[in-house]
Length: 236
Ligand SMILES: Nc1ncnc2c1ncn2[C@@H]1O[C@H](COP(=O)(O)OP(=O)(O)OP(=O)(O)O)[C@@H](O)[C@H]1O
Image (cartoon, rainbow, N blue to C red; front, side, top):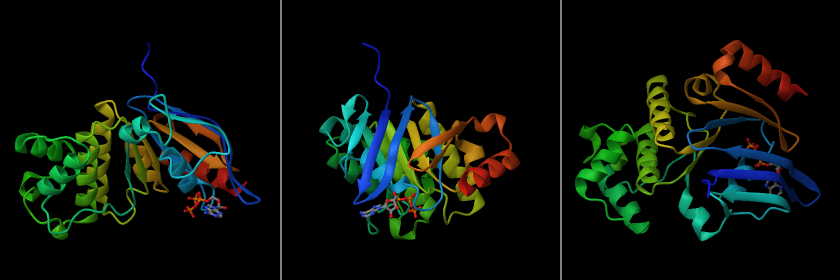
C-alpha cells in the first residue's frame, strides 16, 4: 500500500455561527514539504491548525493525518504542534524536558539519544544541562522540535515560529526545520515572515476567503515577488 500523505485536507468547511471561517480548503502535504501559509489576520489560520489537531470538528470535508481522521489516536500520534510560545518546564534542563515529554509519549530514549535529538534540533551541547528558565524563545522551540523528532512525528505544525526571534535565532530555527524536513517530516507553518519563508519553505500558499487561493514555489519567487503577491492577495 502506498504511504499515506502526512496531511490531506479536502474541501474543509468550518463555521462559527453565521461566519464561515474555512470554505472549502484543500491541502495535501507530502514528506519533506515545508508549506508556509500566508494570510491576513482573521483569515482562518488558527482554525486550520485547530482542525488538524482535532481540537475542533469540521462541518464538511475531510482531514486525514497519515490517513487517519484528524483527532484520532493515530493522527494525534503523528502530529506535533509548536505554539508561538513553546511551554517547557523551567526548572528542568533541555535533556530533562525532552526525557519527560518522550516518556509521556511512551518512549524511553537513553541519554545519548536524547542529546543527539537536541543537537539535530540545533540546541548546542553546552545548553543541554542548563535549566530551561535560562533558555531564549528560540532555544525552547528547538526543544519542541527535538520532542517532535523523538516522537517521530510525521507532521509538524508551527504557529508564527519566528515572531520575536532575532535574525540569528530565526536562521537557526530555519536550519532545524529544514533538517526535520530532510528526515521526512512534513511542515505546515503559519507566518507573516517573508524572509523566513524564503529561507525555509518549499511551498507557499495564500489563504483568503477560507481557502487557499494561490500557491507559489518560493524558489522561483524572490522577496519582492513574494511581497507583491502577498500585498496583492491580501488587498483583494
Ligand atoms: N471560537 C470562535 N467563535 C467565533 N468565531 C470564531 C471563533 N474562532 C474563530 N472565529 C472566527 O473565524 C475566523 C477565522 O479565525 P482564526 O482565528 O482562524 O483566524 P486567524 O487567521 O488565525 O487570525 P489571527 O491571525 O488574527 O490569529 C475569524 O473571523 C474569527 O473571528
